[in-house]
Image 1 (tube, rainbow, N blue to C red):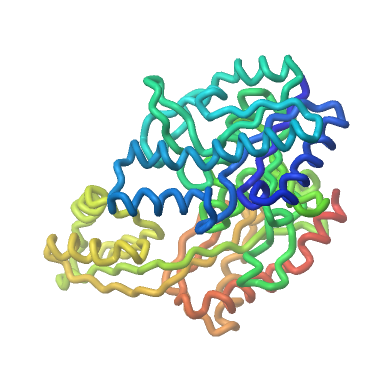
Image 2: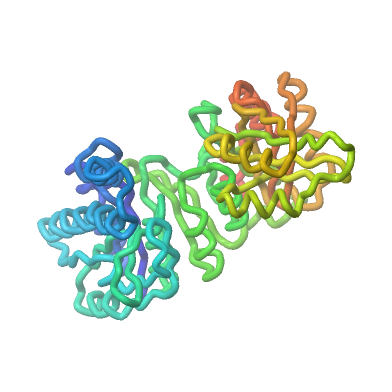
Length: 414
């Protein structure tokens, strides 16, 4: 069977016009001899009747701290409503379809309410429906435990559903339809001249997702990479080809190309706080106790810097007060620098290339942006800066690494 999985986000199913565009996408795939499995999100965004945030607010009106099991039951309803409406729309257009919950689609999870992980997928029911020439419309964002409890997969979980189904069905590709025309070289709200990237590697999109890009869920990328399922992120509302995500970047594997891009994109994360320990003795801070106590307190840390006499790291700003209390209970002085942001360059092309950090430092210096802390990996360099400098930092890096022309350059290579 030649199967393609098409996932449609909340804005892509929220209106009759959007749903008709969905129908057109499905019919086009069928005209090419493909069998289509559809995954849908809840309709619309917060404030709209069936959006997930609206359902959460409804539960909190009944009780300020809803029971996690019952909250998952309620949140799963948004996607189920979408499946019924989309399935009905397909049938009205002449496409035989069937609406399915995550459980009916064979999605089994580990039972962590609110942020479950998929432990296995049994696609038998979906394959049976495809054999009957029916198009399954699956509720994203949800699954079931082995004991029958409904669980949800966390924010953006419909992406995970789509890719997990794609992997289990041996799909030719998974198409993520949304309200943007692909992955951008930067957030257009921060860098107005950001361009759509034609193609990316799994490593690059995974790092961009982890470092703040919100177009696709990081766990969905990890599943796609593990099973080598090509992804295409594209708009429901126009015919642009979007961004293809696969194992390599094709011609970009040849660094000698004159169009070779060291950096693929710029990402950012806001609402961060830099924590510096001040133990006042000049001796090494008790990092074993520090990290253990923070973990026990549910504090996640990032951009860690440890030396013989100093220790600093980054946390989300909303846990800064809790972090301060934990550290002071250890007898440590603490300096908190709030209102920070992390800006990162991402690109598999920077592996082993000298001078990348020099370009980062020079670009930020020339823009008048001070660097508070840095971290890096094979495909990223991240700088912690004051939030007030975010826009000019991202724009300076975007220009420094030639990303204004990145889309055109990649197009020339394909």
